[in-house]
Amino acid sequence: MAKMPPFPGTTGRRDWRTAFAAIRKLLANGDDTTQVFLIMRALNVGAGPTGYAKMIATPDGGRMACEQVELASRLTDRAWIDGFAPGTVGAAYRSFLDKTGYSADGLVEVSRVNPMEETVHPYAWYGRRTRDVHDLWHVLTGYQADESLGEAALVAFSYAQLGGLGWAFIASAASLKSVKITRGGLFARAVWEGYRHGRKAKWLVGEDYEKLMHEPIDAARARLGIADPVLYKRAQRELGPELASYLSNRREANDTVEAKPKPVKLAA
Image (cartoon, rainbow, N blue to C red):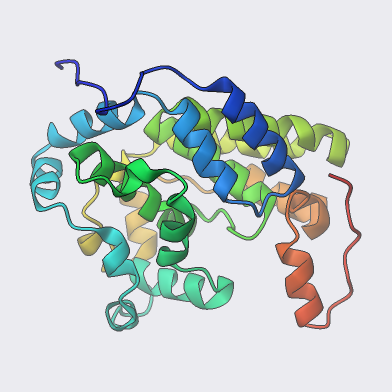
């Protein structure tokens, strides 16, 4: 495969200073999603061109690259989301939105810390695509979005799928800190399982998501080779919600609203 040119205006060098500053903030507050996009911009040098080249080398990928459908616009169309039959990927995504309160346009807004996201360029379109499928990957993989463990496992899965050192940097940092917080390696092992499952699964970025949303979710997982996250589920059970979400205050906020017993506040 021919080597793709770099993104116009970029140096092709990784910005480790920005990455370390951002990871410190992210480890102090796992809900600060802005830091994720700063890390991606600093470290994912070359991942966009490589991924885009892989995509256009496939028949469906080439077609989708020409059409340049913006998935965020589809995923924020509630009438479209409400139209999926029970048991489909689309229905599971609808339940995800209703349960978490997340939205595709929320990710769009946070990602604007990186102005290249909005550039009219094929690489930028590919970057927006990888951003917009993030929550769909939560649904497909079963990794919970409102906890540190689920996010770290999906970040490791994403590194295996997408390349880009930023994903590995975040997953590694969260895993290393988890050993101190949880006093064990189960969290880190569940994250490593996410990486292994990402390596074994079909390349998900190249999927036609407008079609995929209509598939029965169990059949879609089988077709895509997405394995059951056994270690992840074990870590959820054994660590409990406080340790599984040691980087995040979301669960604490949700529990307060629902008048549940307040979990222990963990040190950052």
